[in-house]
Image (tube, rainbow, N blue to C red; front, side):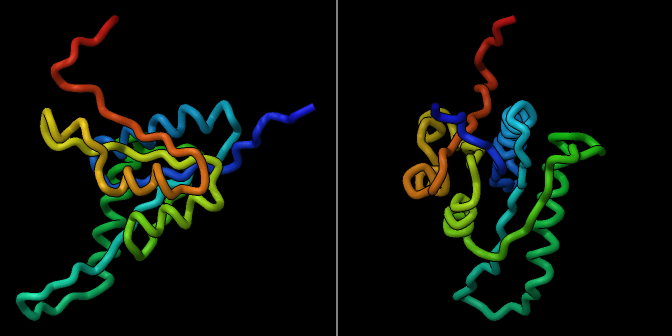
Length: 152
């Protein structure tokens, strides 16, 4: 007899966009009945500047990423983040960091960021890479079109 797959951890890529907040909500809707933990992962990098010298502190970028992450968690869950939800910051590119995280995850959940009516139908580069290279199932969450009529 085959036992059902055990969902232990769902990893959500959080970048502060509305779609990543929706991804948190969808992931939590899956995690609760499955008894899984949810890990909100936000990646940060120091941008490369080629045209001028600017004094940059790595802590500033990390702090900014932490603020984005906390804001997204508050938007998704309010002031009380559920007990099964943890948050983690990773220094590195979202593509490579989330591919690495997918090795220990039961599922990876991402928001899809669209850019207008036509381009919005295309996956972003991070989503595309993760759908192809992740080591676990990937759910890409799309926000409903603002112009769509809701069926009630």
